[in-house]
Length: 606
Image (tube, rainbow, N blue to C red):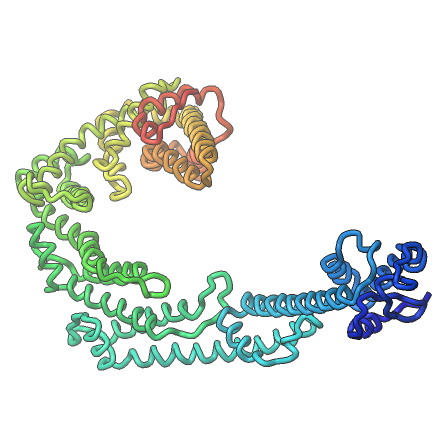
């Protein structure tokens, strides 16, 4: 039996002659009545045998075959199921069933075609957006409006995608060229002082233009250009993607750079904020050096650049004074205060206190101490200023500086004793973990008094004084070095710190993971704790090794001596796997640095 085309079913179904059922022959679709009758009586046997269930099932099956041939398996089955009552094969094929099913199939096919086209269009535009950005994709979409080929994108998506991609590349190149030209035009316009004056005036920015140098204009142009470049590259992960500049964002970036000039003038010589800050502190603003003003300019420009954001558009009006005040405090106050306290340190009162502290007691050494001690004091005072201390109770910043200067001098001998004990225990035949770590912790507390990184000669001065007054300690150091006792003890200390660091990191990581957080913070905290524990050793190790007496060159060459000292340093800075002997030192460090571990709620025992 040959297949019947769907059009035959539709033509038969569209014949309106009062008959509603269809019947299939070997090659065609015909109409038939709903029942068979003779003399007006229904013959049930005729209904059963002439138009029986087998014929009805065949009619339904041939209709399904025609549907599949026209629409495919999926749509045909979906439409047939949707428009045919349950148990369809025992029911006659009706005209309504045929028309409803075909209409449903046509609608489904159209919807699928539309969905396929939409999906293909979306895929193409998404690909363009990823490669060239939203603006290029938008321009391309407008260009393709009304394109019959793009409307039928689902028919041959890969070929169309290749064609459209080439068009997108051309649009992207044109956009990049237009944007670069726009940036250049804006930057060129900013070389015009009248334009800058008008912009500042409109934004309420007060600038003395007579004090603005050509270099500042150039810096402004350079900074704004960097911001505009960022604005035109909206995707950090793909710098080739460009977008057009927005006038409001360009104006915001320029205004923030003009605010930086305004703030800098206020923080410069004779500037209102500079005078105010120094008046509040009771310090002479006229003592600010040119170097300090240069540093203020660098810091202000850098801070404004950061605060305004990558595109330069952040609202920073509420931060302007804070940025400038911070720059003045960090860059100018400390120098002026140190200079003022240097004069104080040269008075007879303080000279007589400083002289005994200096190892050799020579005039040159005294003058050096009169310089670096006030520098340390000034740094401490400025740190206190940042913490909000106004020094009213101390009677002003100068009095506070004098008191701190006395404290530094008085603490010097205590620092000597601490370092002396530290050396004695680090070079001992057997480490006394309790005492070594106790003196280590004490030195950590005194580190600012020593000078630390602020004065690289401070530690050397202490060692010079200690070994001059206690030659037996010098001899103990030399012996410990020669016998490798110093190297072994340094290794034990290093392993103890490594043991603590690993345990701390493990505890912190587990704590964060249990809270469902990323462990990055744990690594940072563990590193901070490790650095705090290493701090005193790092600060003292270099001057300690430098203090070792050079041996007789007939016994050991200078190169070999230096190699041995480097080996001791390497032992400390590159620890081995923690040994059992490191546990006692680790427990001592935990005990004597207890506040460090309590701060992070850490329980440690080895």
